[in-house]
Length: 245
Image (cartoon, rainbow, N blue to C red; front, side, top):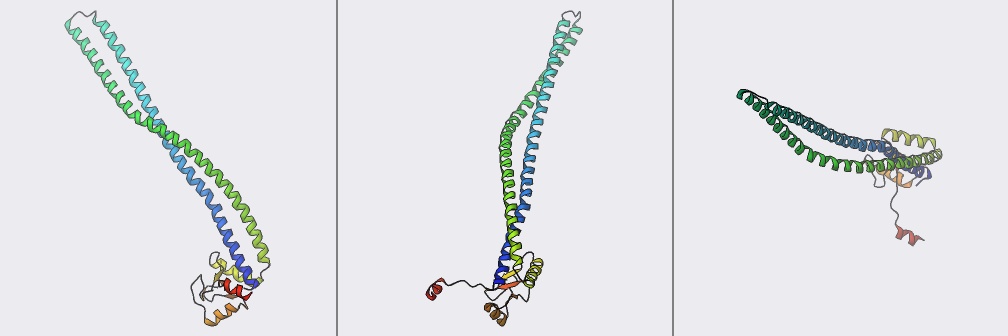
């Protein structure tokens, strides 16, 4: 393979590596944002459960206060019954006391319902809080890992771009320009293997004479269809090479 062609193939390798690094550098913040969104969603769920439990307790406390109020009212009514003069007044007090007792039973039933609702809610909330704490640790670990990986990728990209700059300076301007044109047109793909007689990128077969010229390697050739720089790189027969030695 001609040195100029070998340099372009290496240049493509560096550009591929740079593209991979840029893609990963861009993807890492998105990954962090995704896991943070999930964490935020789970946090809101726990907060909603906590608020629901607090509202449940508040309702129970209000009903307990209502029961105390009815108990106090009932006690006063009984005291007042001691001084009634007629049966009609006595029955009126009994009705009032009976109404208080009915209200107390109603409040007690509501408290039992609220306690039934609170039990699984409290259990689920405690489990969710433990899971959330664990998830926070995982998220922080992944964020730290992403920060380290980003720093490593940025350092690697800096090295790759430096190597590319040095390598590009060694390539003939006309060949480099052809490579850059093809790479821009085909989204970072400027060279193609044609060892099989076809452009590996666009799959167009080379003319017989063009394929022979490519195998001779006297000049840098491009695909007549896509414009990529072609190279011929057959596998080495190690056994043959050993016999030659």
